[in-house]
Each structure stands twice: as C-alpha cells, then as structure tokens.
Length: 523
Image 1 (cartoon, rainbow, N blue to C red):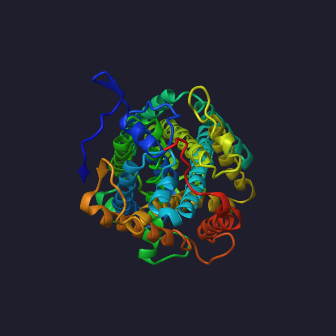
Image 2 (image 1 turned 60 degrees about the horizontal axis):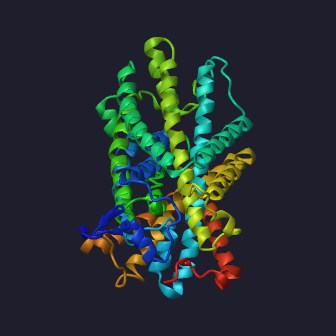
C-alpha cells in the first residue's frame, strides 16, 4: 500500500501562519465548508466503526442462525471466509475515503467516480441504498436489544419452565422505542461526548468478548471437544435443507451481518482530524480487530455447546435464544442458579446499547450530508446544525424512521425480517457501487489520496465487487422448505422493492433536479 507524506495533521503554526488540518483542507478543495466540529482522533473514529460492527451484538443476535445452518463448522470457518473477503471491501472503501473524506461517504464517492453523465444517478441510488440500509441497521440493532431484554426478564423471573414473565410484542416494541429515544437524546450532545461513548464502547466490546469467551466455557460443567468445535457440521436444521454447501452458505449470514457498519468511519470524516488518513485507518482497523476478536468469541462460546437441539429448542428456559440458554445453563448447572448467566447477558446488552448509539450517530451524519446536497424531502430541515455543531434534526429523524421500520414487527415477523434484510444486502450494495465505478468508469482518472493500494487497487476492487454480488445472491436463496408465504425469504422482495422505488423516483422526478453533490464554497 502506498503512503504519501503530505500535509500536517491538526492545526499548527508554521512560520506564523496557521496550517489547517489536512482533512479540513481536502474538504474545502472538494467544495464544502467546515460546519461540524472536527474533534475526533483516529482512535475515536475507529471506535465508532468498531462499536457498530460490535462482535457481541452481531454474533449474539444471529448465533441461532449459525447453529442451525451448519453449526460449529459454519461459524468457525465461515467467519474467517467472510472476514477475508470483507477486508477486500473495506480496503477498497478506505482508499476511496482517503481521496474523498466527506460525511456523504459512499454516495459522494459514486458521484465523483461515475463521471459527469452518470454521476447524479450513481449518487442518487448509492445514497438511498446507504441511508435506508443504515436505518435498517439501527432498527435491527435496537430491536435485538429489546428482544434480549425480554429474554433477560424471562430468565430473571424463573425462565420459561419456571413461569417467568414472557413480554408481549407490544412490550418489546415499547422497549425498542425507549432505547431509540435514549439514543437520540445522547446523540444530541456535543461530539466530544460521542467520542467518549465510542471509546468506552470499543473498550467494553473488547473486554466483554475476552471475559465471556473465557468465563463461559470455564464455568460450563460439560465442554465440547475440539473435534466438535472444529469438525462438527450440523445438518439437523429442521427446515428441510440437506445439502451441505447450501447449508454452509446460509450460515454465512451470521458472519456477514456482523461485519458491517464500518462505513461509519467515512461518515464521521468531517469530524475527524486528518480524515484523509485517519478515516481509512478507522475502517481497516475496525474490520481487522473485529475479525480477530470475533473468532475468539465464537470459539469460546462454542466450546460450551454440548447439545445443539436443546439449545435451539423453543421450549428451553430462554425460549430458544441460543446464547442466552448457553449462558444461563452454564451457571445453573454448576451453581444451581443462572444468575451469573443473566449478568453475562447484561454485559452483552450494554454492548448492543453502545452499538445502537453509534449507529444513530452514523445515520444522522449520512442524513446531514445527503440533505446538504438537497437529495431528501425537507432537506433544509435535516441539514440544520445547532450551536454545538450537531445535526440535531437529522439525529431525531433517524431515530423516528428506525422506530417506524420496527413497527412492522407488530404486523408480522416475516414483514419485519424483510425490512431488516436491507440491513445486510442493501448496505453492502451501497458499499460495492462506488468501488464498481472506481474499477470501471474511473479506472484511469481516479486520483489516489494519502492512503492507497498502489498497483493492487484494481484487483482488490474487483474482488470486493464480486464478493458483494455473490452474497447478494446467496442471502436471497430460500432458507426453508417447503416454501410458503411464512417461510419465503423476502430479502429479494425487500431489496428489489427498494431498487424499484429508488429508480422509479429518479425517472419520474429526481433526474430533472438532482445534479449530485452541491458545493457550498465558491470555487
């Protein structure tokens, strides 16, 4: 990878003349005023992306999926496969981020890379996939926390077999609304507070993973063998799928869902010192550390698995919530009660809370940037920045839309899953589009920034694009047979519907007025 020495980071004095931050200078070159408070360090930038990836959130939430579709083999090796290819996606994004360090991130990149003729349309479709994907991510994160709180209450009141309290879907949606409200309140604070929360979140995730990956298998009276963890492939999924390759690719969802959200480093570029270097470092470091720490967490928890069928059973104490059952039974079997397991679930709950907090932060910056360029209805409202240099209206809009998306759970979990499916596939499509334009339309014109991939740039970019195309197909496959209205995988319906809406709005009216990113500095 190339690295070009250049402008000084931070505001320093040189021969009596103030030299502005390199990210600030590059932002001005791109035609934008510095309106947000540029106060985040590379550590803070990394922490926000790492918090949204949140190993404890993704793996805990979808551990059921991993156990069902292939079990240990799918999780242990699938994690490494997904992590390997995610690095290609992240490296490609980091290189582009270095050249265009703006809060708009992906949609701005697409506009610049697709050229004058295709730029506006490329920007439009990338921006809407990105922003809707982010809202879906926040929805899924906070709804996952609401569900986990339901399970914690159930276990704390005796579990399913002990007559514990099983909250209704209306209580769960109430939890979800309360969590989002608190996230909006905290995101209304100055960015220095968000930096503190992000750093605390990163530390909590790392320490939490290490504590749980060691504690749970240590406490469990019965432990799985190394042969089970590294070689057992679960084909007893109860969903009518028996092909091992098919089962394996379905199980990859746990890993790929977890390893997403690192575009937050790009969306925080206008608040990061030396963003043309530190933004890319934030993306790459968040992915690398997540891969390492996540693999350790998967191994540690899986060593406490001895009976997959009982852990996945909806009739167990945790109502079928796999990791909750593992934690609870590990302590209950050794000490006679599962209080220790409930405390461990509390550690996970705090990590998920931080994850949702960072997700709202990233959402709001994307909303701020997209509305700055007039791409959203009532753009002037969402682009407004308060006296603390926080896009306050964008924060609350992001929280409200995420809550509305979760309301579909009251109608049908199938409808809710369709909505949430955009969180993985929709977001990754947004990740791949600027890279696709980089390796095609901008192959000869792209000007690399301080962080670049040198001669490997095009190769890495093509691998990233092909990987996203592959997972888009794989995660649209049926996940249960026979296929009925209740078992159909609605991912292609949700993502296809979003594509039709975005393209339709472009053809009907947006193509007449949306010209892509609009500079607010006279060049």
